[in-house]
Length: 338
Image 1 (tube, rainbow, N blue to C red):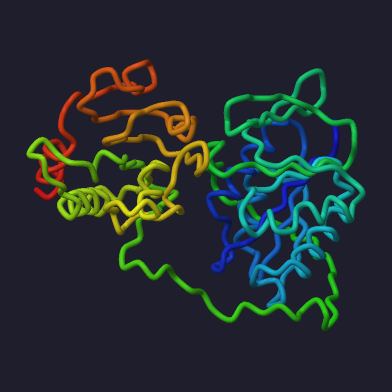
Image 2: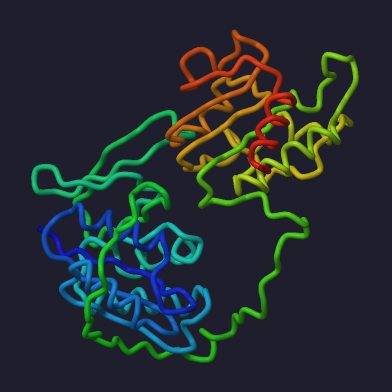
């Protein structure tokens, strides 16, 4: 079996984040012995978690130069760890930090890379990865003969590893950075200008608003302000993540009334994101393929629509409520507020 290496970046407190633990669980599905590498300012807690998961060796690159995401330092550290481990298969979480350097690391090692991997297994004594193509419409399974093989695992694709920390004996890997490698500095973090956080990747529920919220209602009037309040009240009370269909976020350019809480960052579907939440609730959405493709990995799908023949009713939703979304969400919000 190929030598497997899990590379992880330590959080600010020195531990491992959820995405890293998911990548760790993915690597363990390859079976056999594996080693691990951790990068960060403080790595002791992360190393202990990797040891507790069964890592035969834990390689580490630590220090203030590796505290913040930066291509030059992260790529150099990952390359050094991979060479020290003699890794043939390298598994890491497809976070923004790793995705920034993954291709460069693979090139430096003379290897190949596959990203957005959602499945990992062994068939005929060879590792096999699963990933989706064409906006999650086609699934492929493949393997590679080239080594080293860098595999980036999409967060949310695997259950995070859970277990007690071990006691790691960290094998320090020396990485010397020149002045040129330190030119990029993180000077701060800028949060969204919106007063309310609506995109929550870790939320249990995804609430998606469709264009129907901004259309004329049964009384012949628009109720956009009321719609926005109902939506935000639910998102706040349920600690849900907020998504929208393309038709809704595009309405501003067409001069139509819009929900100010939504932007293209909230867009879910063929031209938007493909989130992974345990549950999803679509409201005033038509439920056709371009939108539903964004729900490919939602475990339980429900929808509210006045049209009993909408796309959600054609086997795309586990439950369809044929009702007025305004009335339903008003009642739901009242129950949540109790």
